[in-house]
Length: 131
Length: 402
Image: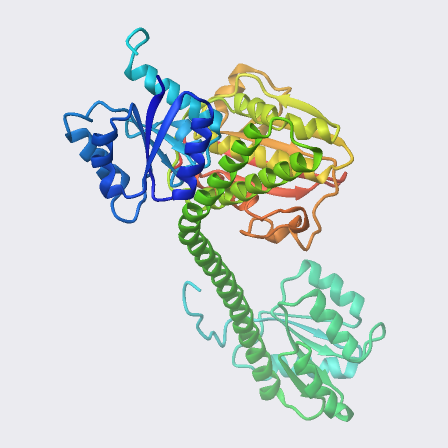
């Protein structure tokens, strides 16, 4: 079965490219939500295994969306990776891939970096043998 | 200026009379001594330009009363020469009566006053000398204040420039990184799809990817420049950072056929520094050295301890000396083209680059300087007398930047 991934990002072009790249691998099924405010609803409806979340969006900030996701019983354990242009690769690397306890990826990240991060995050949340 | 200078008429004054005519000299000497309320503390005399320069080398003189026509130097040239060699000296020109028009000219050439032979008396002479001394003092102070003002102004402009760049950079970075990420992902996808693209398509994809990557590097530089707000310091070994910086730059070093010579002092004391930032500085300096040696050369990288301004060069490996080390000095030398002297004062300014045509943005060294400043260290770049450039970074031990 393909892993379900949700991208919450107002940059539709970027999200579209990310979706294409991931789906090209054959292991992922990707849905895009470009309105932060609908982020939680989409997560509840689609039930992804992983969410990519932008930080700066016009209608609602990424951390607030995360807060909503964490507060809902159905999504509270869904892994979320912040994917943002507001941080630099070096900053993320210096912190071991996490900022404030959350996994971060700096835009532009290479597709390899993304895949690695996805694998690591999904595996962490679903130990081998359970998936 | 820390305090306002006060007029100090009547202070002891040291006068030099430059006059080759013995009669005129006698008159001057008599006038100086006979009628002044405050006779000069010292009166010396010379009769030629050469003798004057010789005397000024050993005697402290406040005011020179200068005859323009000396055996070895004549006319305005006498004043010009003297003023050039002793620009802070107060000079009163003592002209012949037939040289009325010359007198005025001397004021524009650095003289404080002019007096005309035979037309002044003791009172006038003494007044001219006193005023000349005071005026020169004020002139020098004014010049100094003006210089300070100019320096402060350029620092303020610089600070404002940085501030503006900082504010712009983070805004622009976010806006530009998104489309760049889209382009890079788009290319990645096309690469994946076109398993076996023809040569032109492959070339096009590569050009787009490289350009997007370059744009991203520029934006990252800008962000670096604007976000140097905090350091992540830890006790680190400088030599390890140097080795890592060399590793990171080994491709361009190899490409330009550059030989690396390392003189790293072993077991240097650890420094409280941000290793990523310091590595960034070293990489920047190494890249500059590489750019200066397109046809190959030698890159020498050296580290050693410094105590009381005394460098313990690498050969000094005595452990007692090591305890006294107060700072660590890192030098990166190249055998390249060097930097034009007129460009040297500007190299740390943001957006100043000598490599604009090659895509240089001019942020590398200003970022480096910012980083070193934040570590409360020093960075300087000089041309070497043997050719090439020496970049020197000094980081103090036990000082935590921030």
